[in-house]
Image 1 (cartoon, each protein chain N blue to C red):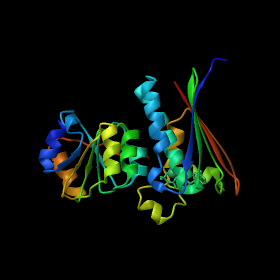
Image 2: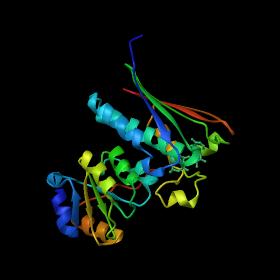
Image 3: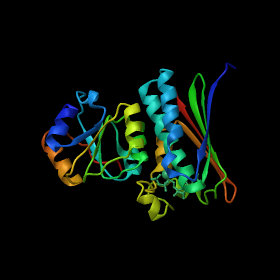
Image 4: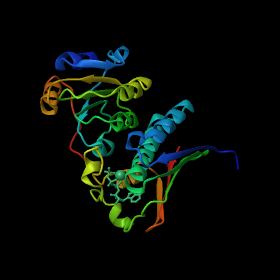
Length: 118
Length: 140
Ligand SMILES: Nc1ncnc2c1ncn2[C@@H]1O[C@H](COP(=O)(O)OP(=O)(O)OP(=O)(O)O)[C@@H](O)[C@H]1O
Ligand SMILES: [Mg+2]
C-alpha cells in the first residue's frame, strides 16, 4: 500500500516528506513504548504512536521505519520535524485513536507482526 | 594491524531530549561507508539501547565505535551507579526505571537483552558506585 493511501484512509495531515508518499509499505506496529518498538519490530515500516518526543523519531530511524503516524491529534515540534526531514521519514497526524487507526489500516490490508517471541 | 576508524561521542546525561543523538550519527556514518543494512541495523539498535541506558540510568557517559576489518565494536562507558546484579539486569522485563521514564516511552526492561540479541558478543563490567563499561561487537 502506498503511504499516500494511509493518509487518505486516516484523513491525516502530512507534516513532512510529502515527496515520499509514493513509497510502498506492507506492515505496521502500534505502540507508545519505544522499548517494545526496539525489541519487537522486525520489518514493519510504519509506526503508529501517541507518544511525542525526539526518541520516537530516533527509534523509528534505528528500526529503518519510513513513516510515523501520530494518533489522537498529537503533533511533533519543529525540532522533531527537522529530524524526520533529514532522514526522509514521512510524518503525519490523525485525530483518530490508536485503536481505531490500527483497525482502519488493518482492515484495509496493512498487516502487523505475528505474535512476539517469548 | 591495519588502521581502524574510530568515532567518539560524549553522551550528555542531563538532557533526555538529546538522548540517542550519537547513535543517529553512527548510523549516518555507517551508511556513508556503505555497510550492509542488516549490519547497520544491529549496530544501531545495540548502541541506541546502550546510549539511552547511559542517559536514564547513569547520568551520561562516553561512546566509542570502531570499525575494523571483521567487526564493528561499540564501547559504552559511564561513571554512574553501576549495576548491582548483572544477571538479573539481563532478564527481559527487569527494570529499575521510575515512572517518569516510562512516560517517555522507555523502562520496560528490554534494552540489555536486546543489546545481546543484536550483537555477536557483549561483555559487561560494572562496579557499584563506580560505573559500567559495556563492549559489544557486531560481525561484518
Ligand atoms: N549504564 C547503566 N548504569 C546503571 N544501571 C544500568 C545501566 N544500564 C542498565 N542498568 C540497569 O539494568 C536494568 C535493565 O536495563 P534494560 O536496558 O534492560 O532495561 P531498562 O533500561 O530499564 O528499560 P528499557 O531498556 O526497556 O527501556 C535497568 O533498569 C537498570 O537498573
Ligand atoms: Mg534500557
